[in-house]
Amino acid sequence: MRCGCPAAASGARDVHPRPTAHSSTTAISKPAAAPRLDLYAPIHKALRLFMGDTLARVGRIDLSDSADSSATLQQLDALLELCRGHVAHENQHLHPALEARRPGASQRIGAEHDEHLDAIAALGADVAALRALPSAAAAHRLYRHLAVFIGENLVHMNVEETAHNATLWELCSDAELQDIHQRIMASVGPDELALVLRWMVPALSPAERADSFGVTTGTVSMVLATAISSSAVKVSLVITPCPAGCWRR
Ligand SMILES: [Fe+2]
Image (cartoon, rainbow, N blue to C red; front, side):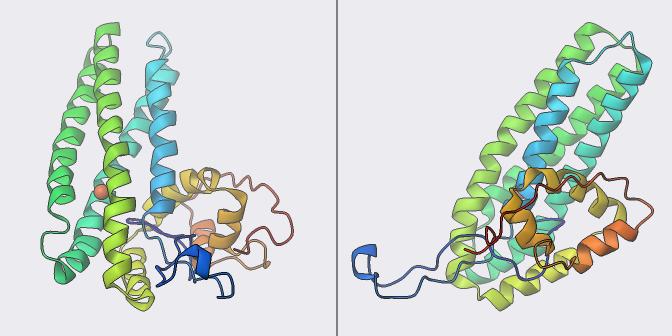
């Protein structure tokens, strides 16, 4: 599992070829460039799925059904906590790596992280207000504010996956990226890991799941094994079979 927060398994790669000196017209006889490690893509896929599902649930919340209301707001609580943790992981592990190699490289995104933390706190206040005095108006206010927060995050994550990755791939070796990844993983607790897997597994393509979790080789990564053995995990892993060889890139 890889990411810019709770992240992914050992050594698997996404398809982001290293730049070469020749264009594609002259590279026919050259072996394909090894893909680079993408620390952002898997966790961002998980967050996008979690955000979209939660927004839809908040939009259709049934205030006359206490069980539905409670479950919906609990899911939103979990999303906001995961987003708070995601910001912390990126601030602690990725931004220092960027700044050490290119001062100012994380400035824009770092400022947006501060805004996201403010937005998360404001959303928490909206949730508390809805719980204290349920009303259609309060529910719709929460829905609109959550939609704006998600919209800003979608743009934000795209910058990270393009500009930040470009800088990381230009200035960091794969060994350095793996070291960052390992330090992120070491900072993720079992409850957070379980929640990430709950949304990451169904967010990835079959080939990405096989690549990240070693499914096709019959092995299960240490990360996944740890999560499965954790009492905190209540995850239904529905894994679409991967055709033979589909994970090879
Ligand atoms: Fe971020």
